[in-house]
Image 1: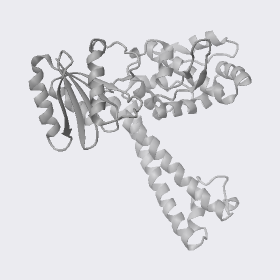
Image 2: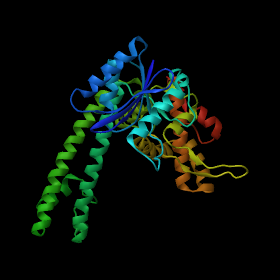
Image 3: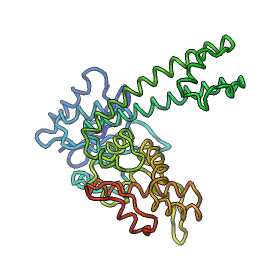
Image 4: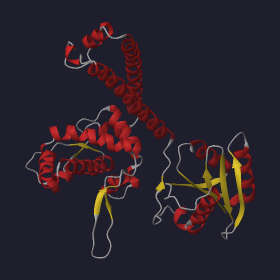
Length: 363
């Protein structure tokens, strides 16, 4: 069996191929253009024979094509990891060599699916989950563009001190939009306002189109129906969280999901000194954002969680208490998905430990 470390970039990938005894047998750069990757992988497959090859590479924004190509080229196992901290002496060849060395030293544990200390392994999503992630991220980006457009309209009104003349409280109503179209403005401001209103209409239509696609995709995933029983969880929110969880069985404990999404505090303890910092913020940024939105609805409708939140808020403040509820929701989601249960709103008289266990109800 051969072991291949790949440092992938846009125009080329630097490779480090090792034999069964760990000695490098090939170090070179391979162009990613044309059919050069296919030729190189075909040569590696010929060298490996029937034993196959194990590949390790770091996560980047454009590795999807390589993950699809590797299984077609006799790849026995793909080890996808999070990038490590940058070294003061960094080159592509050194990075590929370190990846190859890391793979060969820990080959037994990695092939057995066991944890390697200090290595954050990424599980590649299934094709359907990858599409759902792209769809929900696209919807999130489009919502951000729409928000920035609306804020730009407000900025023009406030700069000219005419926002108070709007016929409605906000600018997002149909009556307010009609007023904006006929509002007398200086020539340059009128030009910008017309462009913003046109962009606003186009973005709103695109968001509606994405929302319809989200509803269609959500109907195909049974996990979405469970997550939608959480207060404030729409089709978009439930689908975005479900596709970023994947197989719930890969999280051994209820707290593993919160750690996966970076909701656990940093730890800098040594000897008798114990230091806990802010949350790690590892994992999906979108998942943490959506959890923060769900918390607002849960605190309004779930009396038991609201009472628990107020006790933490009194001791630690509102921000820490809100993050604590987010972390608690991940524990609830783990129970809901692993036991096929729906969200259950508990009474405020239920204690915090019993509350966490009774937040899910059998379907």
